[in-house]
Image (cartoon, rainbow, N blue to C red; front, side, top):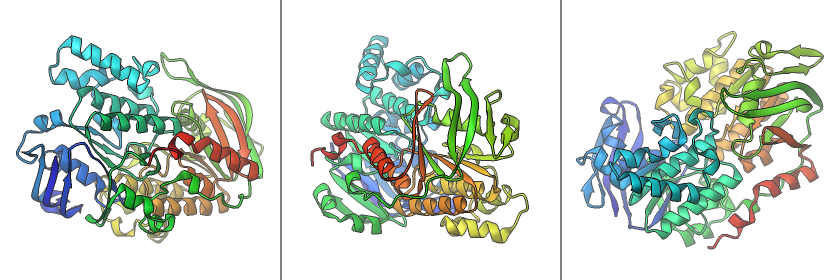
Length: 493
């Protein structure tokens, strides 16, 4: 059982950075699956850190109240003892890796706990089978997609067989098939009697698994819902709370957006990472330009590699012919701007405002503040970017991209970790950028974002483009068919 009594926490020395939670009282019974939901920055991640002991043992701040897990005080118990009971899957799985190859990473936790070699081998074999990881074994972790890294992190936690598992935005970088796998994993853990705490924005895949939904706002628990009570809320009620859709099939097909009217040509876009097979193979093709182009496909399909090659971050990868001009990789470095999937790699300054200003050719505080206001970041303008929530960091990186005024913008999962309201704000900003004549490419697994703003779709699989189409009537049906999986829709209530 997990119990939080009158817990208040704010980050930084003496709580100077703010954030955190206020007067949290929460009981979680053994074997329950609890979902923490609410807008970005509401305190969901802080709750997971309180349960797994990262607060107060790792994150500095001012804390009052107490947290118990299985009768032990987390603040007093050594972190390594809590780790035997509580397994964690972080929003950014890369931050919890200790090895370079996938097999070693999955077994690391059990080895660290000193379990017998034969037991580890048996657990590994079962975990690989349960998580369908055969194709990922023995791979370099740094060459995996974000979704594949998430699967490795989940498998490593499962290997350790903890009583409690906390997950922070586990679906944020997963494709539709991987979300089904995640759902199956959660169901299996629940059947084993595990206590599961999930901090999430995507809610639809949790139908039939979650026992309770804890709605948070401004660092406080505002309301608790049983699964049945949450089911009875209308789509509008959930939207008013800043929550994502609970049923994908309820998403209405919007009016078709005006598709891109121009194209750019790609020549010899082929790429392979060192000591690996070819990841990308686009000999000669044309893609839409001057629109908002959604790039879809399963994890590992080559989408992120394509974006890196396009933006010139990988040398010797083809050329782009656009508006009658040929762009080689070094030319594209000054023409393109990419918001990476892991935005921690591109946040450098001491304040959010400075982060936007350094992206501008001619720095203008007024223009920077306007961009930040459009993305609901005014209140954190003087905060250190690394002190923000995952969703807030994502919006800061998007603000920097817009401020750069580059002709071509790439966004790799720009709504990862974003609630409904901020997803809508990002969609609106992308439309504004498109209206200024920029070409926008969005790698995404987010059906809501696609329906809201994308004009065209490019579908990748196995390093090639298998389909591309405008978001007209036929395109809307294609995209809904791709994302809406009957196994999720018809999940037991």
